Length: 128
Image 1 (cartoon, rainbow, N blue to C red):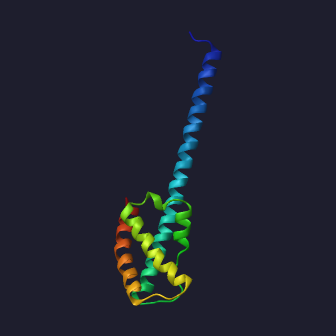
Image 2 (image 1 turned 120 degrees about the horizontal axis):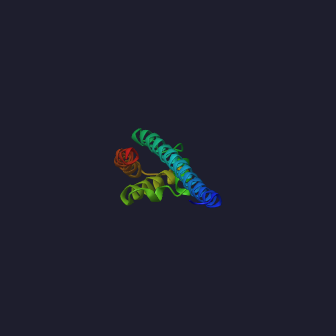
């Protein structure tokens, strides 16, 4: 029969491993929740910006903070390359509006087209 100190040692080792795994799992779940929150905020901003672009607005008011937050948290790198590139392109136009407020009608039209293709694809990505 195995002596009591060996069982104690086995219990300590198993407990330490179990504690490490559970802590890792908890952190992973929290990270995924935060990632989803940032990306859903970005989607909400894109939808709002699409409404402005559909009205033909060429003035300040486009939301870019969620993009900045998601980019800073490095969550955009998880997106498919095509979607990420389209989001970058739309943000470039919105940043131009933010910076100088001078954009052409063609740029607003391009923004509408980009957002029209980004939003459904982004929603589909978030559902998976």
